[in-house]
Amino acid sequence: MPYRPQSFPGFKWDVRVDVLTGADVLIVHCHRCGRTYRVAPHHLYARFPPFTSILDLEQRWMRCRGCGARGEGVLTWHVQQAFPPVREIGG
Image (cartoon, rainbow, N blue to C red; front, side, top):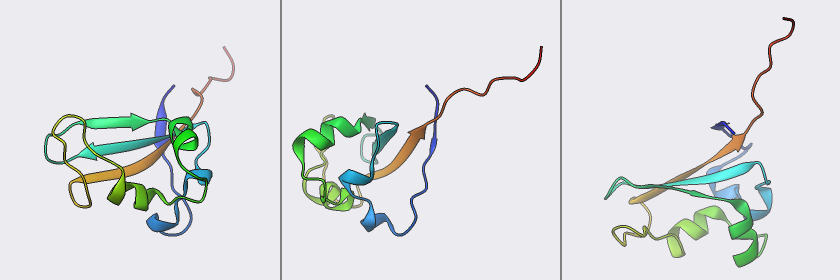
């Protein structure tokens, strides 16, 4: 299913685990080695309390599996939301 950038009202540090829905995906990019990871929300639900900030996860938990980089400035993230394909009306 295609994804589109999700805009959350407020600031980046306000995004918490409980804000993410099943249609969202957390995109994490490592600037050191160039790898990009997609993290489904159910992985975050199972591991962290709902009030945990995604920004806090970036600083303490996120680590690139390829090069081992971690921390602010090396890893960046954003949320994308799945949307259904557009159907044409008519014939």
